[in-house]
Length: 241
Image 1: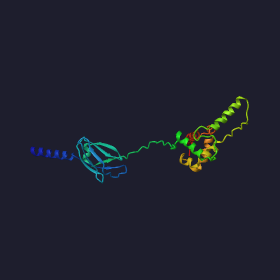
Image 2: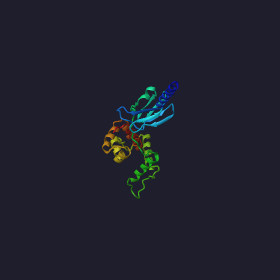
Image 3: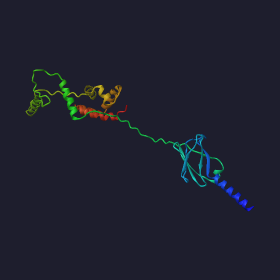
């Protein structure tokens, strides 16, 4: 009788032990939809598997084992295999990851690709002079691309006249050209469109915007294309389309 009791107890212990070697359950999301391909890792036993299409899984485990459920679209979940979990199907629910959208500051800046080197501007001056009509066969005293001795002689004559208190000609006040007129004369519409990245209907507005700056008349009086060009490049950064 005693032997039968011992044998029965051993069989009962083995059945209980065997029942606690596998944990059975199913994985859902917050909407109670079964989740497949969820990585289920037994940290303690160092084993892992994935849930089936219907979300079900069966993994070897014993009481006290730590299990982790992993999915790239859901938050990680950890459970510990308690004795009660082996007596019924384990239901694991995973919460969807919340993606935080960080504020991104986008700064709009116009890109310019303009050759403002001295050589380029000098070549522009030379091209402009070459385009002017010249009288063939008449020497004007001008050395092309060199010093203008005629102009120098006139200046020396004027200077000597001032020293002697004499003046053969009345000085005519120099007419100041407006910024708008100068820009329109020196820069075609194509320049504003291709170089300053402006629309054709924005050109007049941009020129007026520049002209409202006190510095506009100053750069115009210098009568230098480079000064005006640099000024407009700076104003383009301030101008909002």
